[in-house]
Image (cartoon, rainbow, N blue to C red):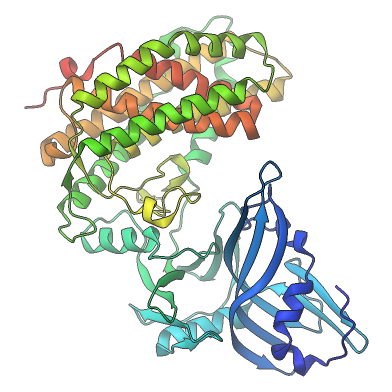
Length: 525
């Protein structure tokens, strides 16, 4: 950016508002943490800031940046806040460059400072000394130190997350919540409470930072947690495992179900343990008696809410499919779903009037295979912030634990088809019915094992938090359907080549609503 006004490097702290106003707006879209890439950025401005450090050749700023955005299909403007640590220096450094300041007598570089060692050291010192950082508006960044420790180095850990993960030292990560949202982030809240409840399959927390404005409203800026040495998440592990299985099975002219069963034993052992851990998580969450966590009875309004969500998303999905054309297989699936619409709507009304959902508790909220780390000692569940596109008050709401169960079941389905699509792409094939059938056998066996082992522990230790008998199957089908419809809307708009995965899930949920099986197969005594 070129700024015609003359100023020197030492003037930068007093010129921050002008500097931010002149940044190329679209430069922010290259960053993984910026979630509104599909929106037009109409304006950006400095909402609030604190000068953390000012040296001869470096200024470190804790900036809260406001983005005014608008969807191309809408006239509505939205203002969103992001927490962005900024490093401004006259020296070129790395690839996290946001923009370049150029004026008649100055050239300086603006960087995303999230991984900068000096920024990280500043946070570490503030946490250890519990130093409150004052912002320009009068707001405060308040550190909460739970354990004494120190930081020796910093580097970027991963770009997969919509948040930013910076590796601090051998056993710690600082997790920064870029999207600035009012309230205590559920990730902090859930991890802290589960650890206190004796649940060992989560990260330990060393400390955290809350931004508190002049009215007392709080925002979670960052937490510092234990780094779990791991072999990858269960999604990665499952894809590698399925790739190996497919490679072997593809040599057969004909695949029998028994062949697939021969490769299942080790993986099913892992699924049993994961089901046990998730069940234990829900049991321990149900025992927490704090107001924001204590289990509660399900109200008719709760049932109406999920039924309304399904109906709205069903209508929305059908409206989206009208805008596109699909191949014969997808078209056939859509036609079958439309045929089942009347049955589905009547079943939803029946469910609304007679539903038994157990209890509502705090849950993970966005549980799937990527949220489970595989370690040498077992498994660790991460990322308790819920669906990041939803407001925090929605993510903190209590819900049936079957939402998490449904998330895992849908994730197994996605894993099977992701492996299948990878195989087809590698072989240059359009389809391979024998491999697809084998993966469907795998999906069914894994899903049944997961659900049955989850049920076994929960019905023994906390039977009131889930519905019993045939009500379990109906309720699980409802939560799976809600998830599959949400997936369908996403895939048809963003990844149409995967659209058949949620369509298959929707059809299976409709069939589930016609059948009840666990009530007769599982002993609830």
